[in-house]
Image 1 (cartoon, rainbow, N blue to C red):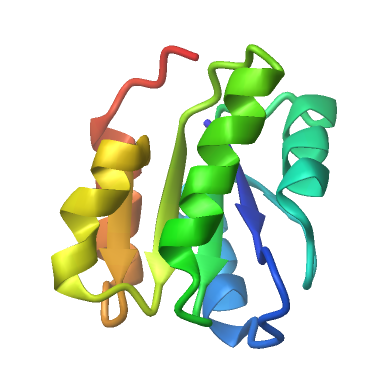
Image 2 (image 1 turned 180 degrees about the horizontal axis):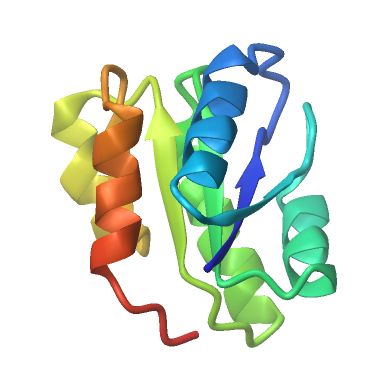
Length: 127
């Protein structure tokens, strides 16, 4: 599985997403990292260019619901069926809201890299 890990918006904190990237590489996944401060359009462009199976957004700024809605809109506008997930500073009360918007999963602060890797090993992506 090829996973694109992205840092949308103005959030400049990327240590967590880099730790996750290395952990997922160690678990056998192919990782593409967007770098900091990307728009949703740039993230989707990179996902298409790199033919990824799933998009992950690392969001620590508290804008996860707004960015999730934008991801859903951009994918719909482009008629793309790329699954996506969100991780970062996600309050437990927002996990179901993110899934209702369209995220396949949401990983709150404190999620263990091994648990995230286990989740991806357990699912089959049909994009």
